[in-house]
Length: 137
Image (tube, rainbow, N blue to C red; front, side, top):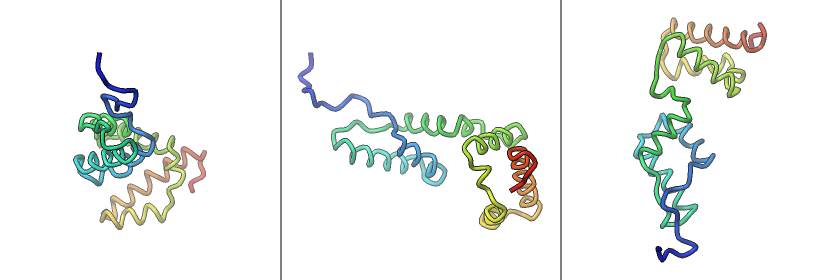
């Protein structure tokens, strides 16, 4: 029998909150994993206090894999992977929000060649046509 009182912190960290998952989703590609883990642990300590158990690298890896739908490990560049990415974008509502201006800005920011930019536009417009029943946005 331990002498831990009724207010003793749990032995494991709480599960990632929706805000934590949003941070991982938006910043996971831009920040190194140790820095992202440090940010998440800082949030955890701010919410629960200094005695709160910290997230681990394994927990962060699992969360990234879960949030990305397992695609981080697959990372394929074939047509099947592209269809999965487009289907996820469609489900999340992102595909419907893409405009020609966004695609053009993306091409400029990431220095796509004219052929790559054209292929990107055609792929997105084709996927939007499928989504909207033949009505490209």
